[in-house]
Image 1 (cartoon, rainbow, N blue to C red):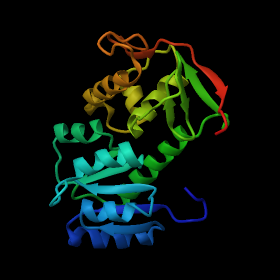
Image 2: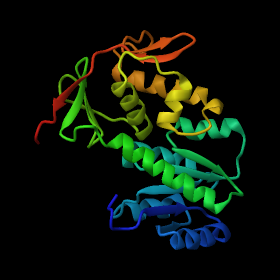
Image 3: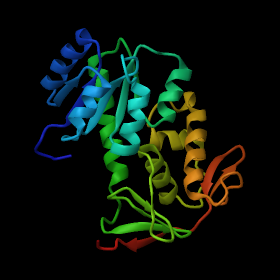
Image 4: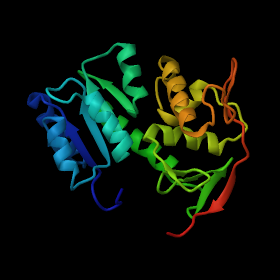
Length: 244
């Protein structure tokens, strides 16, 4: 984010009666808001622009919010907060499992939404910034460049990871050989309501294992500690980032 420019928010919701007053409110709070009434309209705008965060409805005509969220977190690596009338815990879990950063149920208090936006952006900023900006993390043949969020294997090939997978891996790399329970992982990766989303952590760990383990069914790097949580069973080194 540019310190001098307003925080850019893309608001995607097909209900103009909600979208337009919310956009006006967020603008008064100092955000730079762009509106889109559908995922297709948002995709067109994203070809030439990049917001700092996306507020996304789930139930929309055409491509729904869940599908569009997958694109945002995997291809665009943009934080996402769902705005939806769905309030069941299972629906919230689905949203978090595919990579959303937070989940706000309609109707909501606009001031709470602003607080959630700032919280998500602070969390993303903390995790994105390494302690030493010109160093990467190296472990068991893998290298993670935190600035570019680039994961490479021993041969130097890039392996795509989502925003949530990146934050989860960063949590492990910053605490190697330490047992991290689900509540702590959710606080570091998602940031709220950890008690509701234990399954979301398990699913994200499984996805990350499929990326970095030789055999994800018999994981050696990210080990399950029964009754405790998960642990990265590897030594982690800081290495210089190679110039391109």
